[in-house]
Length: 194
Image (cartoon, rainbow, N blue to C red; front, side):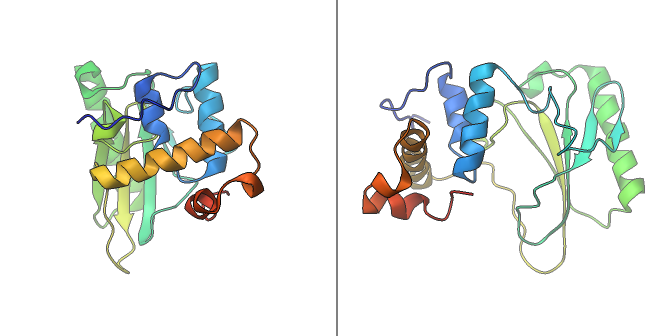
């Protein structure tokens, strides 16, 4: 997949990390992600315990409830990052796989899971639509009120739309006030500033 925006470069951030910025939900989160990437901070390695309360951990994994239940029709969303900073499933060790099964068993007992899904994104964000390039699982349980889907890829038009949004975010991060954006630019980001 060759969907890149050669016009967008951000000092200290490589192409794959810029790819992970494509799928952030808001300008505020974009700015935090850029800051973290430029400073070499991984939110799954340097955990903010005020936001993420670890409910379970073993030798290889930690688990907490996603503090931002952003997905409509979700009853539960657990985030389960590997303790080691790895980005691809090929980097997993056998013992980490066994420890992950232990996390699944804990979650099933702790939350009496009626059903749901497990997702693990890896590698290039253009092929997984992820925002954090640290290998982690998500356990999601629907609330029964409607459709709940997990996105692993966006179509080319949606990715190109996201490039436009990120370019506007970057313009704002570098000092252009929202009010100084063109009407078209304002329209693209007006509901994504929080």
